[in-house]
Length: 168
Image (cartoon, rainbow, N blue to C red; front, side, top):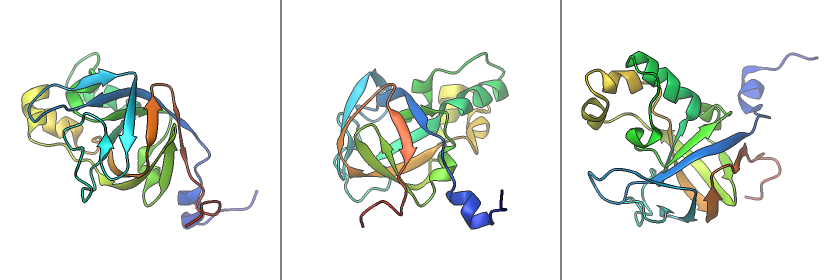
């Protein structure tokens, strides 16, 4: 096997993830509402989410890795951490979300594009307790914008779109 350079290594992502949880924030300050499926609209995000309707936003959909829930819980000396507390739209297992940097990816019928990191906010200190903000640093997930709308449901596959096969 030939050695790959760093650029090639960063583009190599044959793994597929899976949607483990879906939620929306209906209004500012309100708890997350969990759904088994959701409609996703271009330029808006998940139907029913308070950020819906902001086409200029780079934060139309937020995602976090399921594997990071246990890491955050461990730093807070908890056995587990319910995903709704972290206020992200999608929890994805089996795929390193940071590997989606500058890439488009498919979630069920929907195509998203990573727009940045989803850093924790000061609410995490209140919601998770003392140290909650720092426990989430580096584990907050990513933000994305909607390229193609459709529906997503729990259990849907999450996979990178190969830029060579994508029509731009």
